[in-house]
Image (cartoon, rainbow, N blue to C red):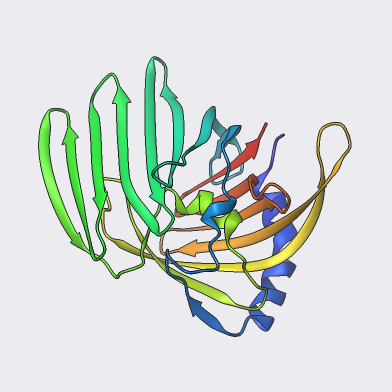
Length: 245
């Protein structure tokens, strides 16, 4: 499915205005909040078509992300795994490991091996060990207890009982080696939309607006499966769509 970012932007404009007028209360969301139903998460496997656009809405690149969720029931841990062919002959694999209280570990490895990250999430600090082109470094970052990592938070969104009219604020740790700092996120449940799957069946979606200092994302989540069906992200000088195929 092709999603033009500018058609989507105009379609959402009215909803953004209404949401801005009606949004009231604010809630600071913690990774171990009872509104997050980690026990609802089940094993899954989804392919997402990722399409990048330039400032005029022209397609500048496409790839397919292989996304899997695996459950370690013995240790009550959840693995969110992305496999991304980011260039000819090059592969990136990242994995976020969460338990039922929040983030536990994160790894990222590229093939050929030019970059490796191992991140350990502690209650009030993050330990990041990085190897980039053979150069090792370690960074310790203080965090507010109850933070999320900015990788798995996208998978957890569908398992949170959001309410309309409330702005949810949360702290995320930026896993990319260019950030690795605390990033404030804000989430709003802005509307519902029914879409059609291949074959004609109707799907009821919860649509969220997720903002941080670098980007604004609109995320469609299947209310029945809790999985993301599509998203559109607008950042500073870039935009992309991601659609389940």
